[in-house]
Image (cartoon, rainbow, N blue to C red; front, side, top):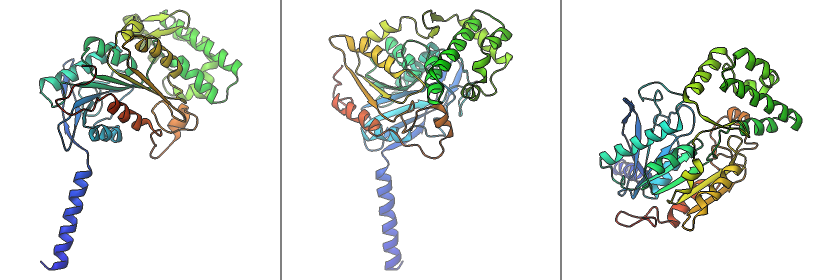
Length: 366
């Protein structure tokens, strides 16, 4: 080997070493079973040290592709740099997980699923599994408190675009109609049709009656695009059967479904540190209502440990946006940039609370 070849080889080796050193996490597959099905998960651990804890990710509504799609990879890397592992998995029927995806899975069932994932981490003795924190987005705002209720040892909860105590579609519809340029009188009329249609649905009314009551709503371009291909009698009857079987509670004043009965009391009982993050252009959940609810419940005790941060020009998924509307989200192509300061706020909070402390230390809430 001549000198030039030798120097080239050394240079490539050094470059490879630098690249390896720059990678903050190592990832491995880790599956668990729930309701008789194998759910496919991925476990991240810091590349250079044992984890001080594990952040369990709780997904929002909809199908997932977290393993193959490497969802939240940038945030997971930030957690690894802070010394924390991460665990997340694909829902049933998604990715390599067994079973069929259930669009109507209850938040109570999703909480049991999360508890099963945590139990598997502990059963296997995964490093850091003696300290579990939760990161959850959107619908996870209902799921995470149920997990904490069952497992008070949860070390912390990072709530992203969290929910209040009621179903959020009314807010989604109103805010997006406004973004789409509808007048306030039209918005009120269409919301009235939507509420009447919901009453017919849950009271066992026919598809035809529902269609008559929502005629103008169903012709609205935004509503049509949101439910494209789903406005069928079969879909209506399927949703009606689910509602009649589950018999959920409804708030009579607003007509909205109550996903978690006694939700306020569950939130009031939370004692772990909570970081709540909201985008000020969130058009999916009513972030102002959730923020007020958190302050009235989690933040009401003498030992409350609640931190709230909001981010301008930030949408439901904590991405930079112009309007925050669903149409913008669907029509935007290419890489999306996280909101300025969003990930930094998480890491700074963890450090301030000593939640990233090295093995052997104690979290402040222990």
